[in-house]
Image (cartoon, rainbow, N blue to C red; front, side, top):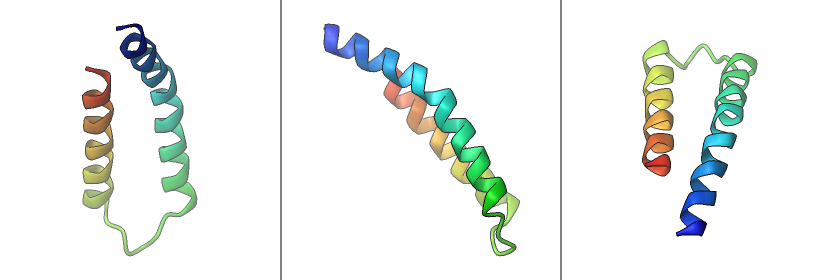
Length: 55
């Protein structure tokens, strides 16, 4: 039980940092081949994975 709680808190603490890293990565490597739709899809998948990990 305590391991689950600490893992949830770690994910909650690290998720904003991970999102900022993701956004910086997208800005740095902004390829013309990558469309906005695929970026949105990847970001939505990323957020869904974070939500699954937290709950």
